[in-house]
View: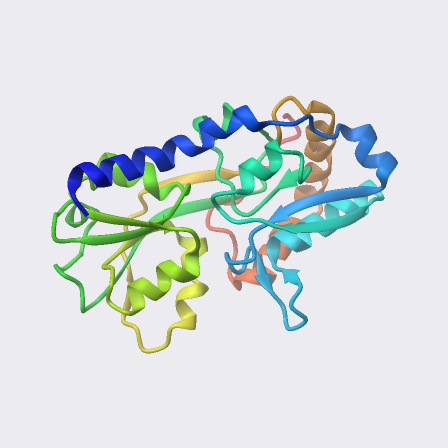
Amino acid sequence: MRPTHRRSVLSLAAGAVAGSVVQAASARPLDQVLSSRRLRAGINPTLPPFGTFNDRNQIDGFDADIAREIARRMNVELEIVQVGSPDRIPFLQADRIDIVLGAITRTIERALVIDYTQPLHTQSMVVLTKASGTAVPINAPGDLNNRAVRMVQVRGTVGVPWIQANAAAAQVTLLDNYPDCFRALAQGRADAMVDVAESVVIPMRNFQGVPWKILEEVLASFWVGIGVQKGNHSLRDVLNVVLFELHRSGFVNTTWEKWFGVPMTTRIPFNPMF
């Protein structure tokens, strides 16, 4: 991909979130959610173990367990709506869902167009590459800023702006989902990707025989909340109270360990203020 074309593609991807605000429809406030007795939660099933399909082809995972418990405590039914990384915010703005999970990292750009609850969990951004079979050896994040390096990334994820700022020289291909990214890496069509460790550790186990390598250096730590449509304060406020109770009871950490097999790297501080 030519450098000018690459910069254009990355710019379009970064601007997609902000540009989608023009399509916003009125959100369902808390009273409508309660009167309908239904909470619509957007979950990405291509991001295990946050979201995955179970053996009955139903969306399951950490996010589904959290959403089910939120609905139970609000005394409403849960409707899970499948979303992907590129369309999760547009779904929220178009009032097709009431809340969105799917490891939606809290960023300033997103906070301009949606509202966040208090943090549900944290994430750590790392470099995923291979110990062999790459165009050039990748032993440190700085090695990515090389014209010979082929990077792959999911559109609209936190790795995109990091690449823009730190690895602008690399060749970059943006794809719509994580399985396609992992296939590109496993098949030797890409050398590395930048993403949160929690999003890559489980999926990479599905590709046996690939010499995966995660660089030790943590590029950034992120706070992840639940997204609601901009200005839907009545729903956001009650979600904050529910999340506080889920943290206080230990439900979040227990559910995290159920799906990830290890404790959260950085636990959410117990804080009644929000």
